[in-house]
Length: 167
Image (cartoon, rainbow, N blue to C red; front, side):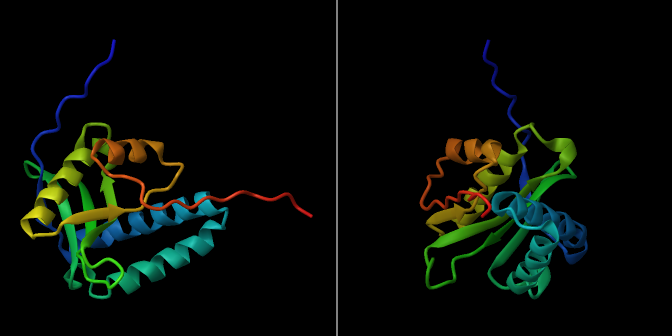
């Protein structure tokens, strides 16, 4: 018997403060470092340093960085997750906003909040007149891939790798 998960309660996006971002930054960097290491076979210490540099470059003013949106996903008065969106601003993607990171807090996973966060982001970007939204996902993250596909995201580029035998 197939079951459909219950709809997540209404979620609203609230701009994040520096104080709210600080502890989430560390978890984001660690998650990104682990993902890059798993996808590329690199040492996690190396990918962690690269993740920290990238975060600092993209968010030099933290949550106040122009064209970057960092939101908490709130249900009632409780945070259930967060996301980081870059507004269109680069010559290579002038029409597309970019989801740099989305996370559901551990105690709230598998309850529909990932979907709710992404749908709330779509509404916010539509309100701002943004016509397109993109993101990256690791090939091994099949749960996220399924969620993104169910929301209408399509593959626009793909990287592949193959380990070679040692000489």
